[in-house]
Length: 131
Image (cartoon, rainbow, N blue to C red):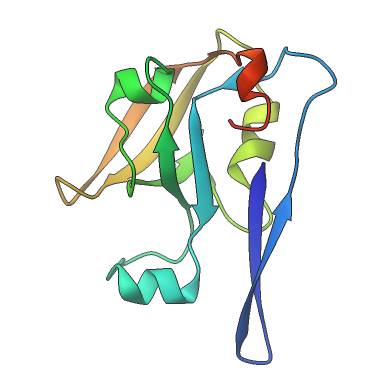
């Protein structure tokens, strides 16, 4: 599932887009996210305007093992910014399970941005809408 936001007439709009592969061959990180919006950027005092804010992390998932936590922000995947035109789920669809993806992640607890190389897995059938 991808969340896409835009700004129209001074109002932030949030759209939900389901991106589910035809089979279970898509790479899975084990996170659910919402896109960074102007409001989130201001409320969280972020110095960047793009990315996917991590809402939940599945236990034992590649993201969990890498140390990604709720409220962290995934800024880019393999050098491509996560934004309205490149949602996290769409960027992950370009990968197969077992691929290693390079994420730039702002970690809220540490207050730092890190580059992480994370090996993806096939998503469990009960997590088909998450990436």
